[in-house]
Length: 191
Image (cartoon, rainbow, N blue to C red):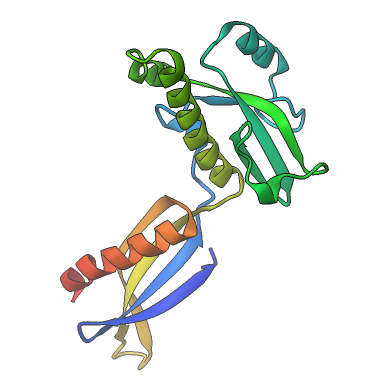
């Protein structure tokens, strides 16, 4: 696998390499995580295409949240009416593209809510699910590998000693930040 970025860091008299990689093995968070709910799409090209499920939810599920969608190279799911201004286009966006449905855990978390408080809670959860699902759909998930660079006495070159690695970070900035945090703690143990 080829790193999308590599940084060399000097710390405590040692040299470390932080390499960031795309993480293509991450499962769909809507299937794998709790309290994420599900997204049903009206687009025939989406794996979650389910017009019958949407119709049933609209007719009988007060917790269903309408969603908007944008696609132009990358996609963006959002709660209807909250699509970022830059993604509102008569050609590339749809104001009603599907719905979000809460899962059993979300319903349990909302059991004491009613009226507008419950609707607000469901819209918040739908927005969180849209953000994470959009990152997953766009491949915005990464992992890092931290290695210590040491001189090899046999070949008179450098070799890498593994220090730490972790995968499944949603967003490049989150991955970079965690790698630097771990280097600050793990680097001392590796020295």
